[in-house]
Length: 298
Image (cartoon, rainbow, N blue to C red):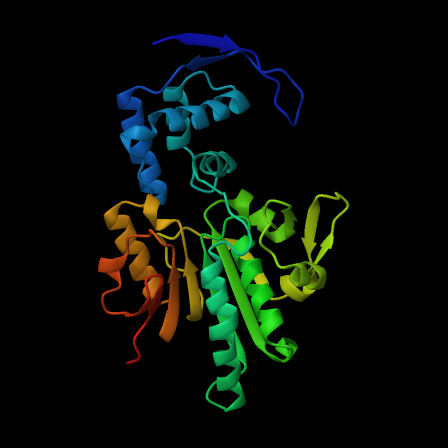
C-alpha cells in the first residue's frame, strides 16, 4: 500500500491546508465499512468492483477537508448528523448526476402525445378536475421535472387555468439547489426541440447556458428527500422513478417501492427506468409498457 503527500489549495478559500496523506486505494476492510455506512444512510449498495471508483471519489473529499486518511474520513462521517453539509458533499461525490432533458425520448413521446391528450380530454368531459400532480423522484439537477413542464406547457394551451404541481426531490441538497437555479448547459439541452427552446428557455448571461422561463419554473418545486423515508405529499397522478433503484440493495428497493405506492393515486402511473429491476415489486400493478405501470383502482 503506497502513501503520497500533497498540499492542496481549496477552490473557495484559496488558503493552503495541511498536506493530505492519500492512500492509493481503500483497503477491502475500509471498503466494507464505507459500504455499510452508505447503505445505512441511502440504501445504495457499493459492490466490491466499485473499489477504485469509491477511492477516487473519497480522495476528493480528503483534499477538500484536509483529513489525512480514508479511515479518518469514514470516522468523521460516522459521527456527523445526516444533515451536515459534509454528508451532502460526500453524497454528491459518490452518486451519479449524469442526466439531460428529454432523456428516454420514447417515454416523453408517450407523455406528450398520449397521456397529456388523455388528461385534457378527461377534463373537458368532466371526468377529472383541471389538476395534475407529478413527482420527479431522485430528480438530480431538475432536467426531468423541467422536461415534464415543457410537455405540459406544449400540450395544454390553457395550462394557466389548471392546478399543476410538479415536485422534484433528491437526496443531495447540492443537486436540489442546482435544480432550483433552472440553468442548463448545451449538453443537457441536446434533445430539446427547437420550438421548445424558443418558447420555454432563454439564454443566460453565459452564452452556453439556458435559463428555464417562468412558464416552466412556476409549475415546479424542488426539495431534499431520501427515498427511504415517506414523502409528506398528497398522492400523484404520475411518478417518475428512473435510473436510481439499480443502485439499491433488494431490501432498500422494496422499502422505496412501499413508500412510493402510497404516493401514487389509484389509477395513477409509475414511469420507471429501463433497467430498474422492479418487476417483482409491481406485480399487482397493471403493466402498460415495460417501463409504465398503473396502480389498480380499488
